[in-house]
Length: 303
Ligand code: MN
Image (cartoon, protein in one colour):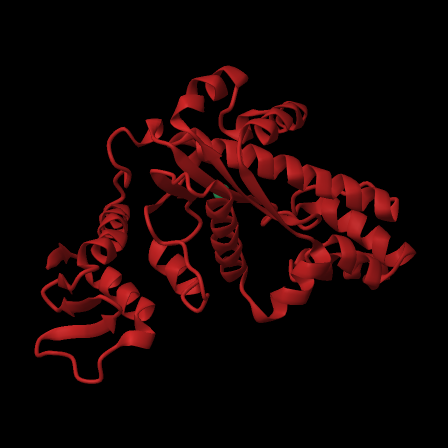
């Protein structure tokens, strides 16, 4: 038997995770009890969670790491174990969520601890401190050096999905999918940890992917400003940023209009120009239509 202590939030996440395995009548004082192959999981209102059976320890391990993480995040302290920055880690990050034009890109990249020194020499750091030209150069190198997965949700796809899915949901599903693919690619090598650049609470994240057939939960950590906690996130961020800039460039060429990034007023002017000269169908191929920029551009186009 293995026992872990979890906060109410984590227990609720666990209950959702085990939805399909819940017992109809859980024991007294328990929140839930679930029977899986080789392990029974029972969570109590006291915060104690019991794992019983042959797979008890393995199943508990999934949660103890996440639990430590969730508790610390709510404390606003560093959520990561000591020495995390020198572990072999998969980092993942997304780019383009705040930009009207261009794709939503999610990238997961694996950095073996032996590569950390090399990446530092290469100049890998927070992409916000790097020029676009520098990002393109470093990204080329990183794509050669690191196992990685890039997911590109182009505006056509994005506009197709967006009416029925929040951006948070879309991001969570993309991160989960990228992580799954990279873990398969790495097999039998396993990262010591997975760090997602935090864009929502871990609980919300796991809630977003709970309906997915396969969920990456083991050794998953979240941290805001993830790029400052491990070069794997900084690398994923640089690769994603480069892919985003490439998507802008490709779309610009396709419609013969220079598309700026961001969501400020220059974007409205360009969007209005596209509406007037090529129409809404063309705009839908290059822009995330649910942004307020669409209405602003339509108003400008009518003038
Ligand atoms: Mn991020």
